[in-house]
Each structure stands twice: as C-alpha cells, then as structure tokens.
Image (cartoon, rainbow, N blue to C red; front, side, top):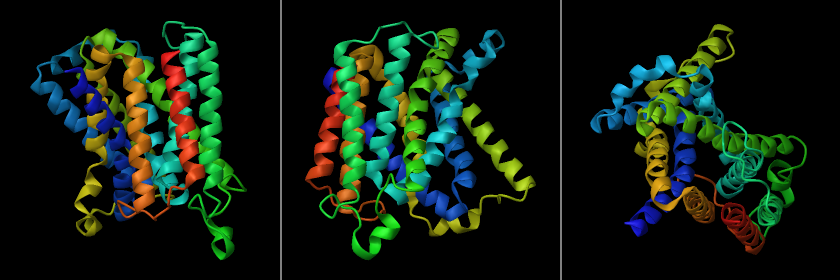
Length: 320
C-alpha cells in the first residue's frame, strides 16, 4: 500500500508541471491568464465537490458558521500560483519555473515549521534544514543561470537579447514572482490544515479552498473588465485548443487529493519530498523534449546539477 501511495505522490507532483502547461494553453485560447484562472480553478473546485459528495463528507459545509474567517483564505494562493505558471512557463521554461516554485515552497515551509507560524507546531531550525535551504537556493540559482548558456539550453548570440539572463533586467521580477508563488503553497497548506481540523472533512476543506480561489479570481477578472483593463474569456476559441488544455484544474484536484491521502500514510516529509521529485522529473522531461507545445530547452550538465542540488536540499529540509 505504501509503495502505491509513493507512486501516486510522484505522479501527482509531476502533474503540477502538466497543470502549468495545460493552463498556458487555456490562457492562450481564452485571452490571457486572468481570464483563464477562474475557469481552471472552477474545474478543480467542481471536481473536489463531486468527490466530497461521493464519499459522503459534503455535509461538513454546515459547520462553516463556526470557522474563523481567516481559515477560508488559504485558497488565495491558488490564483497566484496558476497565473504565475501561465506567465513563467513560456518565458523561463518548465524546469526553471518549477525550480523557482519548489525553492519558494521549501523555503516558506522552513520558515513556517521553524518559527511555528499559522498554528503549525514549532519544529525549530536544525543544522540539516539550514544546509538544505542553502542547497535549495544554490540549486535554483544554478538552474536559472544555466538557462543563459548554450549547454544549459538557454539562448546566445542573436537570441540572447530576447531570452538570455533570466535574472537580468525585467527577468529578475519573473524570478521573484516564481519564488513568491511557490512560497504561497505551504502557507495555503497550513491554513487549509486548520480548516480541515475544524470541519473534520479533508476533501470538503480542499473543495472550499478552491471555491474561495475561484471566487477571488472571478472578482479580479470582473473588476479588470469594469476598468476596461481586461476582457471576458473568449470561449469560442477553445475548440482549437488541444483537449488536454482543460486538464489544469483536474491536475490540481488530483494533487490535493493524493496529498491528503498520502500524508496520513507516509508522513508529510515523505509526501513533500516525493512530490518535489515528481515536479522536477516531469519539468525536466517537458523542457528537454519540448513536450506539451513548449519550446525545447535541452537539460545540460549545469541544469542537471542544479536539479540534483535542489532535490538534495529538499531531502535535507524534509528529513533533518
């Protein structure tokens, strides 16, 4: 049983790379990431509500009146993460973007556990965790820098002006966005954990989190439309989109569901480590072979070493 859960967690982590690529296709079809976010988040929410109803825990929503309002805000990280993926994947590639997300995720987890914020039990900062944090930062920096070199799959010569130097000029802010978006995921998980404890229904809590995310994303879109800085989703162009462009929401729902199943059986540390490995392996394959309609960015030695350093740092943080 544990072996099956480990395999499912590895696949679920890999689905995060697929999710971002699918969301990019929907974004292109409907007119931008702001227009696409409510659609994908709504799909995830609907799927989770159906699953919660199927297992008989949907009635837990009646307990919302006793839940502190801040515990419903975990879903706010989802629109940021999804939008960041749509923006970063075509600019930085799958491997670099996912590396930034993972680095932000692991570093934020280190702060949450080390200082006991958001109601999480304080674990303290161990030497192993600090070494892991340094490895994560170093590995991420190596992946980003390697994008500029020919061996690392980046652009040179005439293309260097357009695609080189991920941290140069405006690219610095794309890196910051990736780190912040990734860092929002453990914050979301910590808040959702409190909501799960209040409702005693993990799937219902996850569905409510996505429902909040969908509502916020839709409100942002409506505000931008009213201010004439955005447009409604152009659904008439979706038939030309590949069928898997609709799978971003499903991938998110699967990731949340598998995580909820895996943590009680193999523990949070093993779950995070395995899903991180899945994210990196899937994004490396997407980049190296140019899968899912993304530009091919061969994974050279420098980027591979960065990936290994990041994964090693993840192991230090999670198991120290």
